[in-house]
Structures are given as C-alpha cells and as structure tokens.
Image (cartoon, rainbow, N blue to C red; front, side, top):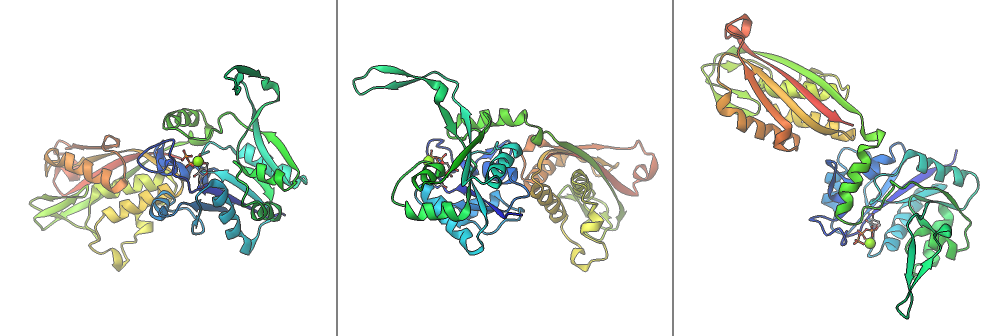
Amino acid sequence: MSRLAVLIVAAGKGERAGMGLPKQYELLAGQPMLRRTVQAFAGYPVQVVIGQGQQDLAKAALQGLELPPAVTGGATRQESVRLGLEALAKNAPDFVLIHDAARPLISAKVIGDVIKALEGGADGALPMVAESDTLRRREKDGRWTLVPREALYRAQTPQGFVYAKIAAAHRAHAGNEVTDDVALAELAGLKVEMVEGEEKNIKVTRKEDFALAEKLMANDQRSGDVRTATGYDVHKFTDGDHIMLCGIKVAHSHGLEGHSDADVGLHAITDALLGCIGEGDIGQHFPPTDERWRGAASWKFLDHAASLVRGRGGVISHVDVTLICERPKVGPHRDAMREKIAEILQIELPRVSVKATTTEGLGFTGRREGIAAQAIATVRL
Ligand code: CTP
Ligand code: MG
C-alpha cells in the first residue's frame, strides 16, 4: 500500500477576513476552523504548517489531537507549502495531499477521489467545480466582454501529488510565484488530473463566509451526531462547616464525605460528559483508591472529561444539573455555580443550567443525610 501524508497550510494572516485572530484560529460552529479542517482528515497522517508566532494559538486549537509538532511556514502560501514538504522529506511519503486550512468543509468523498487518481497513476490531481455564474472580463479600453463559462472551472484543494515530484517542482520553481500547487506542477511538466469538486468546499476568505460555512455544515451529516448522557452522584454529610457544590464553597452546618472534595454537582456533570463519548465513569478515570485524588478539587475531573470530549472533536452544547437536598439553599449560589461550570468547560454561560429541588422531607435527602445530584450533557460530535 502506498504511504500518504496530508499537509494542511495554516500559516496565513487572514487579512481579508480581518477578524481578531488569523481566520484559521477563529471559531467555526464552536471550534477553531483549523481543528475542523484537520479533523476532516481523521485517519490520515496530517502535518500542519503554521505562521511565525502562532504556536500558542495552534496548540490551543489542536489540543488533544494526535499530531506531530507544527512546522513554521513562510511569507506566501507557496513558501509555506515548500517548507511543509521539506519537513516531510525525512520520512518521505509516496503521495502528499496539500490542503488549505481555510477549507474546513472538505468531504471524505473528494479526499478519496483525489487519492484514487494518484493511485491510478496521475502525477497530480485536483478537485474542480464548474463555474455557474456568467463571467465578464474588463478589457484595457474599459469595455466588458463576455467570457464563455462552459470552459471555466474553479480549482479547490486538496491537491494531491506524487511526493517526490511536487517536492522537486517546489524546489525548482521557488522563484516563480503561482497561486496553487497544480500551477507549479504544470510548470514542472507534471500530468495533473481533474476530479469532481464540491460547491460546499468553499475557501473561507471573508468574515461573512463563516456564517455561510456554518450553514453548509448544518446540512452536513458529519456534524449531525448529537449525543446525550446522564450522570448521578451522592455524597453523605459528615462533620464540617462547608461543602463544595458545583465548584463553589458553600458554608453549611456539615461537610460532605468523600475521597476528593466530594463535589456531587461536578461529579454528576463529569459522568454525563464521559457518558456522551462512551468513556466509562469518573471512578474509572480517578479511582478512589488512588492517593493522588485524595482531597482533590473536582474541577480537575470535569476539566479532564471536557478535554476528552474535545479530543474526540466534540463540542459541548449544554449541561444541566439538578442538586437534590433540603439544605443548603442553592438559589443564592446558582449564578456563581453556573459561571464556574462554564469557566471549567470553556463554554458560554447560557449553555450551563443549575437547578435544585428538595424531596419534601422524604428519603435520605429529606432526612438530610446527604446530597444527590443528577446531570445531563449534550455533545455534538
Ligand atoms: N497560507 C499559508 N501561508 C501563507 C499564506 C497563506 O499557509 N503565507 C494558507 C492560509 O492559512 C490558508 C491557505 O493558505 O489556509 C489559503 O490562503 P488564504 O485563503 O489566502 O489565507 P490568508 O492568506 O490567511 O488570507 P488573506 O489572503 O486574506 O490574508
Ligand atoms: Mg492569502
């Protein structure tokens, strides 16, 4: 079987988008665009190329994904691609796919078609879509002339090549500025085949393209998997003068007994999140027999579960927890609890709900022997 590598170029400044960060690090439906693009190539070995000084942004955007360290790109896209290709030279693949970080909507079908063309013997392959707008060209004398669109196609990425051939082409033509790798391949006389591209494989270029890409994604099966799971926990009252509840220290006539800080609320949410990705439960990740977790702050458990979710490409849509006890009163602490949970999960406040109920004096919670919590989490994968 041939070896393949994917080079994702993300070293641009995103000047036309003109947002707070270079566009590839801006959130697209809750995740950095670069992360979405990388995940579209799940299962293939990906090498990311980033801009000078973008290390921290890239690290945050790609947290939890198994990737080799990012390579630093150059002042132009062509330069970034060349540096990425050089980085692959040590362990050179047979084929390389070169893809823009700014095209997060690439489908498995187009990726597969480009690879098929290479396996069929082409030096290079690229997806193209037929132009459907009527095009006019402005002539030197100011007149507009009609350009017959039948023969016109738009080039997309990933553009795939025999690695050794495109690497040689980049080295030989470093001085000739071109806009994509196929143009360079043609300068080097390579045989490039066309495969069917997709309209939805847009290059996110301007700020308004983010909204368009989000709409296109909503239609996309891959982002349509919604998972929900519940979590439940109980801790018993013991001597003390405060308890930890949803990350907040609450003064109380008793403490709560437990190996960690016994925060029932955070434990229930942690289990709900683990449930969404089928990752067992809190006891499996943080065994009560393990001395490391004695007296541990429970935000660490929740933070771990959230990073596991993100590592799967998941987005936490919502968490809702109900605290079941007669006392302490939850109401006065509810806002602080929501804020704390949102902070730990790195999600917006409206995505966090904290509720409370008594059991009308019935059962163990009614007898004030302890506190129970039940949670539900919703994750989009
Ligand atoms: N790119 C790169 N290195 C550069 C310039 C661009 O790796 N020196 C990458 C971009 O990050 C993007 C892709 O090439 O994923 C396509 O480029 P473009 O859409 O033009 O992105 P930017 O150059 O960042 O945007 P702009 O031209 O608006 O500044
Ligand atoms: Mg550019």
